[in-house]
Image (tube, rainbow, N blue to C red):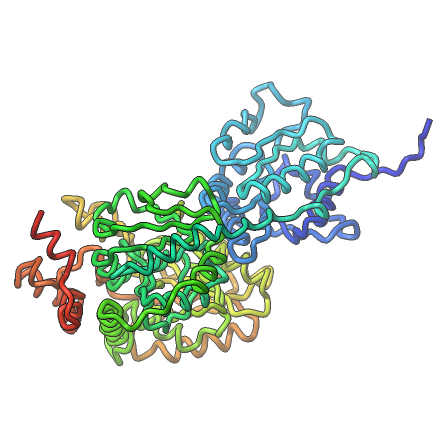
Length: 601
């Protein structure tokens, strides 16, 4: 009988499993139910996994969820038994909704205290059943490293969060060193689908017949942006993108209409209503059912997606193709004949040009009360070619896609489907730790920043340099704007001002407040200097309370709206030089299909 088998603490073994999968850090807050884990983290000679102490478990969970969006690797967060574990739920659902790998480790009371209705004890696993692709409680100490390995493997293969509950005493236990192994070396992605040439031919035929084609490019085309643009040019199909896919394309592309809906741009909302054919690529536009009129003119709908569950989900299809969107874009581009420049193409390009001139006019005002537009102009002037942007939700999402000048070397990430406030700062922390040599920004409103600003000190402590811009207007702007259309009152949307620069400086960051347009260039120059010295910077931009143009409620066309309504819309949004797409269509010999439908209804 062997009696001198080498031993290892189960907690250390679990960290070694994480390390084998490339995990570099775990976010969390220490607690009694994590005592054995804290001892394991402290034994740095046995592993290379860092513990990042955050001020709130939700921040740690959101940082872990955002990590996967930036670099595709699994993020890890820990929450203590009871309240710490429940604080992780926002990050767990964020990973679920975006289909990203995440590992959440839940603390638990020692086994001899369980099932006694004791301190911070409750049945935790059912809480995560809806969100987790893998949800288990470790049964005995020797099982701990293997369950962690299984959880990571499941999170990657099923593209979602895995949850593991660990009684605290298990991590202290000595287990045999040969009682576990890592499956990391065996991990590999699914092979790509083969191209179905018959479907390529059918798609080519349908697209060739289209008189007013558009391309809708979702995140399934990420990495294939240049190929999508080649097809757009060859087909003379203007390009609509999902809001989360802007950084896949050169923002200067002349036929880039932008996103459609509410977090959107004018040319996309107008273009989709006039189109007759849509090539829907790797997209899951969640507003299709609530914005039924957006697809009202589409007669031919061609969808390509690698996920069979998404085919036909958002619109009835005339052709559904299961496969990689980028591969099919390249295959279709090879087979389709290039079209001559069409009136449809020219009208949309003119519309894009007019919209961009409008945005530039707002962004380049030389003096006066600060507006959000000039803040974006300042960012564009100093942002690195490969900058990383962690974007919070609400008006910041909407305005950043309109006013940031993005390119495919940059990264722009947010919470697109779960849309949880507070992802900006955690995202910047995660991005900075993973990309220390790249410029990192977080952009957020004051409502979102108020939820997470205590963790500015976390960024300072761990050297996670970033520039954090806060758009302060003392209201939940996106909600207040919505209430204008749906509610009798704007009750509950406003709150007092906070001096975020003072708060940030108290946490060790460099910080500035700016209220005037003429001061913004100097403030951003100082911020860049501080950032280049490795510092965390907070810019509290006190902006006006003007509402960004609601392009989902466009009121510019005399055929659809009264002169009084149009004038009021132009006055409020400084849109006196904006022209409705119908005018560009008619100038190029085309009629407005949308106006005709509206009049017939």
